[in-house]
Image 1 (tube, one colour):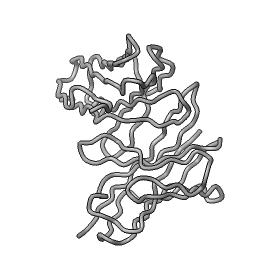
Image 2: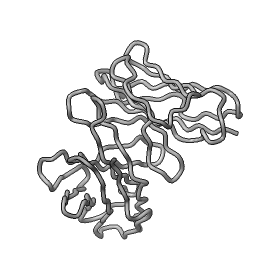
Image 3: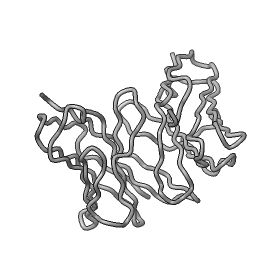
Image 4: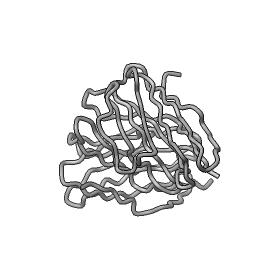
Length: 114
Length: 115
């Protein structure tokens, strides 16, 4: 399968713990995006990378959140000192920088903070 | 600013009958508009897109949508529903942000197909 993959698919953690999620984009895609989706809502943009550069961050991305894409391939999203309000589905997408604007989404990581 | 409003949170149709999922958008610029579908435990899949070419856009699985600027609408239709169409559908508007397209999603419409 050559689509976008995310790991883990599910994560349960206690409040105050740190968690890290991984996204592997489609190999030739140089843009990578993170979104958050809460129950009953559409995904909300968090941040995006072009190659290894993080070019935009949403105001939703508090200072407890950090994302990296060190070699321009896979990306990680870390949440420090998790709160119950962080419980959500975290989606990763990737795209080419060719003006087609098509983003391909992974299956998501569902985070539950207890 | 840009936004999308999906007018129905739930739509229920019988198999073989037409599907209509309604979407209105607001955008300061000429928008790019998309419909995505999300099946349980699967990633979001692009159904179709409008990027200022033909106003009637055909997508996968028999879906199509018409861009109507005067009504600021981009409704999704399908002539005959199939059981496999049951899923959540998102209307999405895209604004060029920096050098990439930032997607703004609607709140979704859950489509139920009755046998």
